[in-house]
Image (cartoon, rainbow, N blue to C red; front, side):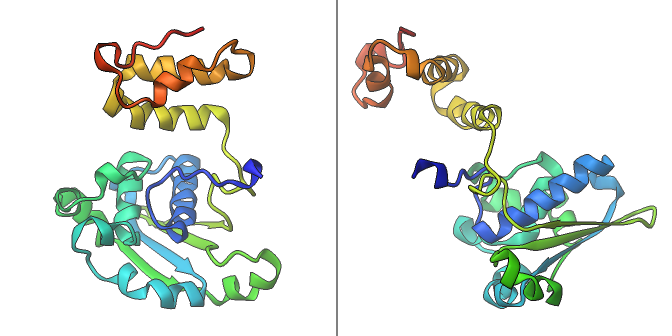
Length: 212
């Protein structure tokens, strides 16, 4: 059913979402910033490492490859706190700050993840280890990505992503109206506002949605 539908917070391959979530946890838990990160090591299952090795270890060309390139995702997570499709381009990839962080990322396989596979059934399980400039080694294991049915998102998280993405296209005011309509969906007397939201030919009334 719909409860088994995953929600993607980061516009990357599924195997990279667990690594992003692990790094985000470390950043928040230990208040890390780019300047105090000396190195990032991403550890994957052997099967997954073999599958993504070329994408994980070598620089990418173009938007599509950027979707798979773990070191880029780690760099963007440190800088922005998320990864979305608008960031996956050659301009971002060639940015000196991004390149500096990419150089700090290594990817390897960890046998412990394979040993636990029979129990977790998670091929995308990952361990992220951060070495700080003051010598600390911080580690986080993530078995599933946040947004997976096993770790579902909150309404507030979904709303935050919608506002960030939709606001670029329809503007903040229209995004606010859309959130209000969906929030009140169960009690709505009519579905006409929802119809207007998905119509392509809105003419001069574009995005002028009534709330009831």
